Length: 477
Image (cartoon, rainbow, N blue to C red; front, side):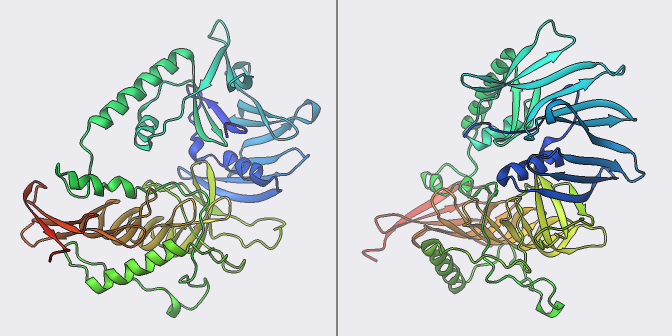
């Protein structure tokens, strides 16, 4: 689709704004999704300081936007400009340090930074090129303006994640309809491409983590990467087993005790789970939508907990929309949480988190603002990603994972987000692919079911080294 909207952008050397958790970006993103009026008041806990956000954005009217501290000190506000345009001004110690210029249609036109004297020292503004959008960067320390281009996309998620975490040689960063985008000069682009190539080489040459460690060709079929959690930005929720909020405690969903790591999974239980999930995969029936008085929850968050945002009273609520119990920031978007909170305002107990599009990402148990206990997580297309035990935002314990690549299912033990220990892998059409069984002495037996109805039974020592193998034909058994 390409970059169509800029929600916010900043110069890296002058700004430490975290665009991943930027509320202005989240509000603007929600508005540009459907151009509906958005009006709200929220309080945001920023490093122990509570900031009050009071805003209203709608068509053909200037943005109303004020951010103030608990003592009334104004940190951000709006000033009018010519032609129906307006600025959002940022203050520090009551001095203007930055301002964003918007058109009357709320498109972002320019950001300007000021020095101690109040003079403009640097700026960014979008410009059109034949091959897309760029940012024109001006700085009083540079002899001429620089054209900054967006960093090329990276198809491999492992490479992209590593580059996002480690590459720092960029001039500007923007929050856009395509996500967080880095902007670089020509020299920085060369450095970026070299860094990406180096990361790709290191990842390709590194031994791939599999269900069990070893070099057997069989292990190529059972890579843990098939079950990586995908970002959930518009998922659906199966609410058939969800309990209604506000019901007496007696109706609260109870957690089943977790299986011990070496506990053998009962065959009948496995078959029942496989049949149930296979039926869901085959039928793919539309998910029943929750009624307005029974809001749903889900949360596409990484293993890092998002900043907590507590809601405040909303003036003039529209369309009788139920207020969430808490707002959560992640990936530059606002998520709504409906559920139980502890005395500190953290998600603890049973709840559901909705995306900024009103869809569900996670339903289940929380502890201290993290997914812990029983819960279900969903892919972007609404299909189940994982249902089972969680520990501090990681899949940990006993659960069922479904691969986004081929729809295969893994039923068994998980540790720190990957399958480990006893487990069964089943294809999307219900065919058993392998069974992994841990023995009391630390050895592991892997039974692989081949397409020609042959069993290949391999045994590994406690270090993952293969120490034996046997082949059995099921046809002649």
